[in-house]
Image (cartoon, rainbow, N blue to C red; front, side, top):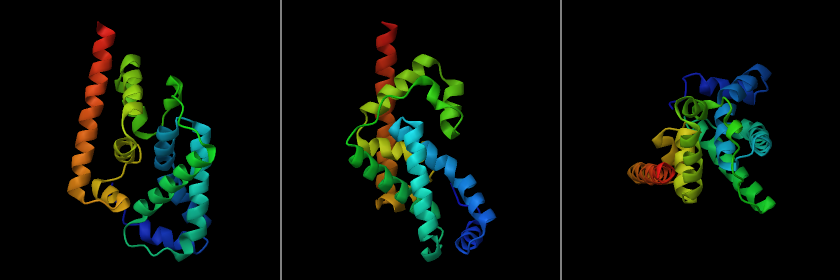
Amino acid sequence: MIEPDDTAPLLARAAAGDAAAWRLLVERFGPRVFAFLRSYTHDSELAEEIAQSVFCTVARKLPDYVEQGRFESWLFRIAINRLRDEMRRRKKHARPMDTDLLGDVGPAARTEEHASPEELAALREAMEQLSEPDRLVIDLRHQGGLGFQQMADLLGEPLGTLLARHHRALRKLKALIQRRLGEEAS
């Protein structure tokens, strides 16, 4: 997603202590950060806790941040680091997601509207079977809403490599889902 033209002035105002600008930043980016974290943790409360920590870090570091059109990449790098720190601290893996936790957050809601319960279960199971790098690319793109160039910058990978990884990850995901749904039909 291309950042709106007003992001740089909004960041400057928020860094200067403008509460309304800060609120707009959180409203604009918070749901996507939360959706990404919830998708990865399968726990709404934990995702909310980590998202709050992410925005606390952003608030603390924002006065020193120099906007160069990469705010989303910077924000999601903080989110990934917080997520990894928390998972290490808790020394646990993500738990399976309950069907009713998809709620109405971002892309997950659109998936739920167009998929049967069996398809959603197959998707969740398939996501759990992907490697962490594959899952990260899919979650950043489809839950975090990042563009491929932003993801390449964030992950420090060439754009072509990232596009290929995303394509391969989607192919793996599709094969896993089809296998699961084919087993259920048998």
